[in-house]
Length: 255
Image 1: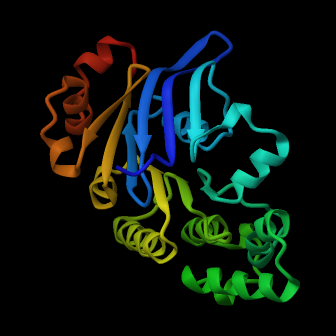
Image 2 (image 1 turned 180 degrees about the vertical axis):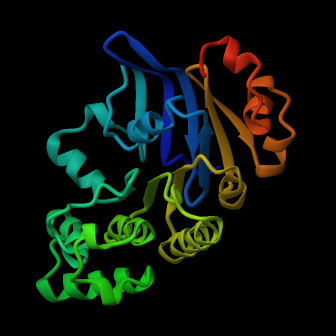
């Protein structure tokens, strides 16, 4: 079996006295798609950012390509970050930079590409998300869908081996959400990335998966494929999937 590209071992995450994740163990393998679902505020984004090395666990170990994020030097983290792309929730674009400059930013910071090479890659990324004609626009001039696509273009600029995405279809209507999901899957295949994606939309979760991971009651439970998740016996999973107000999640104070 291939070695995992991402691994959590007995990981807990706290912010001050607030426990967010507890005793998490998971492995994600090359080129697979791992989908993270769960209630709002359950810790999905924290899980994503901890896997990406942006948050430090209070306990346990998080490894990327077998290397513990917390054991790396500044240079080591910088080198490993070149293999990682991140699409943040609500895109987190630089408001004072144009679409072109937003995509160029990671190339300037994390590569030794020439000016000509950066230009070619930026235009390639903008074309991939159908934003070539918007290259001179600032984020405030764009629609929500355009900003989502620009965030994706920036995330894939370095052709990352691992692509983290935090709710990339949030706020989109069903048709544009479906189109965005198709675009993400096509780009994943094109650059051959491992994809870890958080979503609140069950339709998109089933479309993306892969393996699904459910976050609830501070724990992370692997529920399997889309079909396996739909039929999973855990009552917390079924309460979430069926949208019921009463059940173990309510009793545990997760709502």
